[in-house]
Length: 276
Image (cartoon, rainbow, N blue to C red; front, side):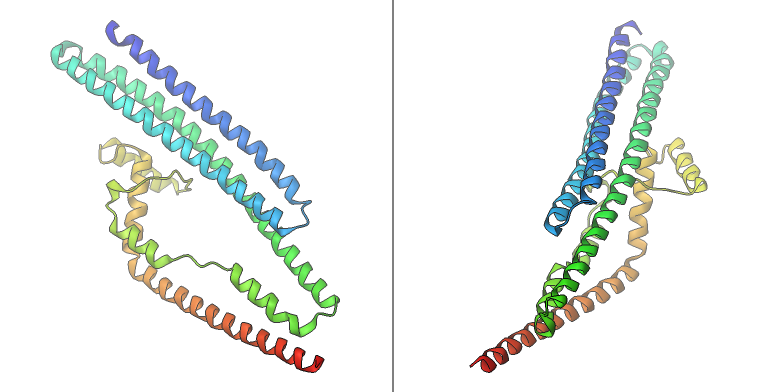
């Protein structure tokens, strides 16, 4: 196997270096999120908090994307190398078991290192989720304080519609109908993949691992993604009911906003008549 020893070693080093770069990235992002958490607790203006929230989401997306891209790149290299080993084993059948064992060791090393990276990513995502919740709580707190100050200044009922309309415009409902259609229409194998941390019961994970061992799935992550997608397909009727409810809420929001804007206009008109 001397002709392949250097390539085995190169791939091991590349996996190790790639994982180290990712872990360094997560460590840097974690430090920044901690800094944002501290600053957000002192921030007195909602625009600043929204910027913090946007930055935290960006760091989360970058970490997910980095691990997914790194894994995809290395998987492609391993597949190319596997094909070379297969050709070599056909040319020299006596070395087939030796080459297969060496490649399985390399693949096991790859999976172990990426499991470590995914665990680290999951810790980071949990941290980001906590900080996002804190920032949103801070935004709500500042909005409540601002509303109290408005009434304390004597702006009263005539200004209330402005506050209500402004609040309604902040609410953005997702187009769940479009999401359902896209999720159910795209082929599972052709859909773009995003890394996301998932907690599963041990018995479910053991079942997925057994399917991987049997060759049904290439990896644990592929098995989890498959069953998650199947769950969405099986829940189509329930999702459509959710879609209808959200559409009703959206309609109600639009009607309420129009009524409030009408009240605001009438209030402004009355104020002008009294002044004359």
